[in-house]
Image (cartoon, rainbow, N blue to C red):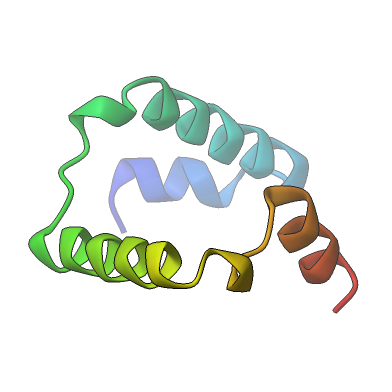
Length: 71
């Protein structure tokens, strides 16, 4: 175990969650630096094509969130 891992192991759960949130916020603030992989681009193109062919089969963001929350 390196020194960082030892330090992490001494943190409480709330502190670890706060650290994760800070890391996530930092990553999100630099999202434009994240690469989009070729397979991701292909999947987005496939989904866009499917949506344009059948736009009524899609869901609004509100509908999708409600469906996920009701699982």
